[in-house]
Image 1: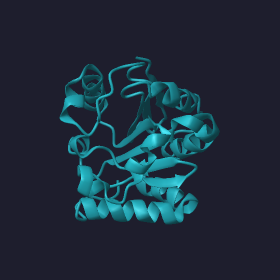
Image 2: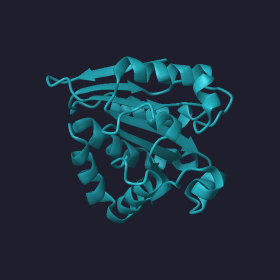
Image 3: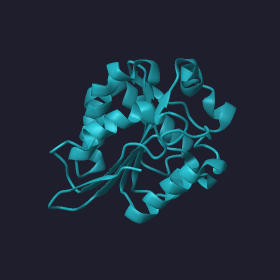
Image 4: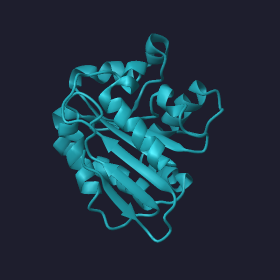
Length: 204
């Protein structure tokens, strides 16, 4: 498992960016995170793991079973070791999964809110509730889903989102940048998050 560490003079906040969590998703997420690791503009301490596992049996991160798997244990170890305030999880999905991930009835169907399409099939939402419970209320936790059938086409845009998080020291600065770029989509994502967590947490 390759790991990059970028540390600025401020050393805080600590940020963790991970990809390749299960299946063959690392084929699509690792190139983006490898590019992020080459960035020269960053604040705090950033830990970048392009690919937790190159290939594995697909176990959904919404399931407790994932966090008992070899790759899930690796992920939990990273979180426990670095205690990030910013946590960005990069996934990849197939075209056939788009409707399930963005289904307005997703919460009723499987217990979690739908992802929001930022455009070009790039989906944004929070992380699995099972994992979110391991973070504090003030932590900033985001999932980005990359469309694997056009990952090269959207790679630059996903990288820009991650660079925004890499370069800012405060979550509100990141949220401001996201709202400026995707006003309608981020407003919807925030509403879905607040409804799900009954206003007990700030998005995300």
